[in-house]
Image (cartoon, protein in one colour):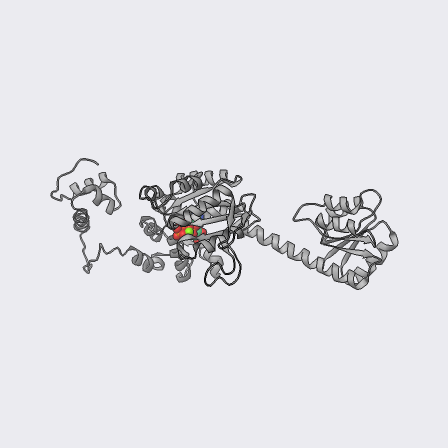
Length: 458
Ligand SMILES: Nc1ncnc2c1ncn2[C@@H]1O[C@H](COP(=O)(O)OP(=O)(O)OP(=O)(O)O)[C@@H](O)[C@H]1O
Ligand SMILES: [Mg+2]
């Protein structure tokens, strides 16, 4: 049931309104002045306030100015004498929901109150959803206490409140989009749009019209006006993902947008002022692309006012246990399961793996494991099929004997194979096996492998 507060300095009017509204089932309170009204608003947090405009002391407009901020701001309807509609218009400009002229028409009064009550409910629901959303992209949703991750998050926190363009670098699946959203949803632009664009996924001939919009008839197939992604993101943030894949022509157009802060729809002569923050991301080495002349240097410097480097998961394995529990909880909730954790052998296998697909890949392994697991603990058998699949690099395509495998022999084989593949360059072979150069030589010599001779440390 919605709660209504009626503010009017005429007692008779208050009493009539109370009766009408209570008959309709609204919980109704009354106040005889704006000052008293504000006190009551603080205490009972009404959904709707129906207030007279002209009152002794504080008037209705001043009352609107003094209302509490969201989420406690009530939806307000003002009542005004016929002939003073201009003050009702002022009230609307200040944020009132609607106005009614006196003498009041009962039907219109009830319809207006019901609409206002519905809006108040929607507003509350929206705020709740927004809160959930911010929660989802809050810093608690970014797991990781490794030094590298802590450093990255420190930078993220610092850039939130500013407007600077941010470039996020990292391999696939390291959390670039998660970070971009965290920046937006913790910035003053958080109530404005966040528009994510995958630059690599838009066909080259459509990219300009997708980004900047087009006018009807500007090219074959453009039958109606279309608003581009930059315009949709106005006052908010645009996330240009896979920026390294932008064609040269589009790069220069984006550079122009950054310089002039305006866009022009394809086929239009007029420019439109826009205010967007650009967060871009790539897993490419842009500096190399600049040398190869496939990425514009001037655009690069505009985009990377601040750079955030997200380390690959294999360089921050200490984050794995926390990530695993985080994803178990997430998928417990999603699939209604009650898995407590993961046993030691399974954790060991997960930590040993090198995760080329980074966190995205770890997340999907845990998701599958949560589905497969029939006990309270994920064990090796729940992830075995996944890990075997992902670990199948081909290097160990051997038939295991029924018993008695000689590990030293196996390792020797592996080192030799790596050396062969690396054409005898030990540093390369070490890299192939994910070992340091030193470790490689230590094992190579320990296992008594013959030549090649140790080379100079590169
Ligand atoms: N630090 C983290 N804590 C929790 N979840 C994370 C973290 N980093 C990434 N994730 C999750 O991993 C998945 C992949 O992250 P995201 O999409 O942000 O990566 P990306 O770098 O944009 O990947 P791609 O390059 O493949 O687009 C998402 O589901 C994301 O929520
Ligand atoms: Mg991404």
